[in-house]
Image (cartoon, rainbow, N blue to C red; front, side, top):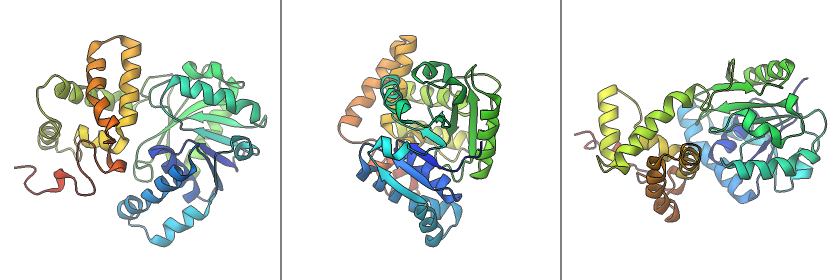
Length: 295
C-alpha cells in the first residue's frame, strides 16, 4: 500500500519531531494531541535545534511546518482518512491501552498502526488492537533529523507486506530502516543505551556521585559527546520516570524504585529537562557549556 496520509498521535518531545520529519519529507501530516497548545509549543521548539544541527534555513523549517495541515484534539476527524497512524502517546501500558481502545473503532480498514514505544514490544500491545496484521513498531531516536534511524519490528502476526511498506516509508522520510528479526525490548539502540543510563542513575541514587560528576567522567573517559544525564534531560524526565517505573513493575528490583523516588520530586517541581528549562542542568545555558566544567 502506498502511504500518503499520515497521522502522528501524541506530540510530546519525540512525537512532535516525528511529525516534523515526516512533514519535512513532503507528506501532509495531521497531529492528534489532547492539548493542542502543547503540540504547537513543541513544534516551535524544534526550529532552533533543527536549523543548527542540519545547517538549515528558516525557509526550510517553515516549508516543513507548512505540511502540518492540522493539529487537533478531535481523534475521529484526525484519523478519518489515515493510511498510517504513528502512535507516540505516553510510555504507559494503561495509557496506550486506553488510546488504542478509543482509536481503533474510528479507523478505516486500510490503516497501518505503528508505535514508537521505547519500553514495550509489539506483542505486549497488539492485543489492544483490532488488526494485528497491520500493527508493528517503528522506533525513532531523539533529534530524528540528525539521528535518522527507524527501527522496525512486527508482532508474530504482522504481514510481511506491511513491514515492506514501512521500510519504503522510512526511506521516503530520509530514515535508515533497521528491521529486527525478532522482538527485543529496547530494540537495538536502547538495548545498548538503557543499561548505560540505568548504571548512571544507580550511581546517583546510591550516592556514589552527583549527575554532573558522572557525566564529566563518562565524557572525558570515553570521548563521548554527551553524558547520561545530559541525554536524560533531552529525552525528558517524565519519559525517564515512566521507563523506570515500568522496569520496577516488570522486575520488582528495588533499585528502580529508588531511582524513581529520586526523579519524582524533580518532576513535581517541574524540572523535567531541556523543554522545561531545568532538569539535571539549567537551560538554555547548561553548566556543561562552561569552559570550567571539565576542569
